[in-house]
Length: 121
Image 1 (tube, rainbow, N blue to C red):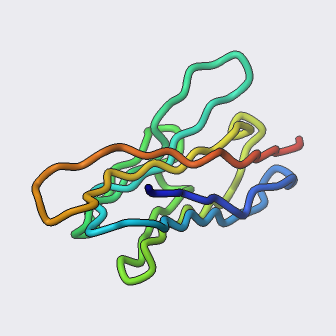
Image 2 (cartoon, rainbow, N blue to C red):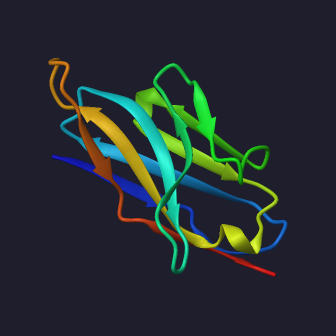
């Protein structure tokens, strides 16, 4: 079994910064893509940013230039540095990982439990 545990959420004023972390643990052979999603009040879950094992990144238009995703493969951890935060960034942020638990080319998608980010105006 694989677990993803997020940390780093909280309350911040507009213009401020937060750094989210997500550590994967359990029976892991290799992690492929990792990413961050968010779900705001009354909204659908949406992709914020993703990063592959070679550190190629992808960002939602709304966060490009303000958020930075990175990962540490040795620690099975992904980070999201969020700068210049806006009230519209308020949401529950979820970590996601595509994980291989054996050397076979088969993977499964896992989610963290979510961490609340609230940006006050």
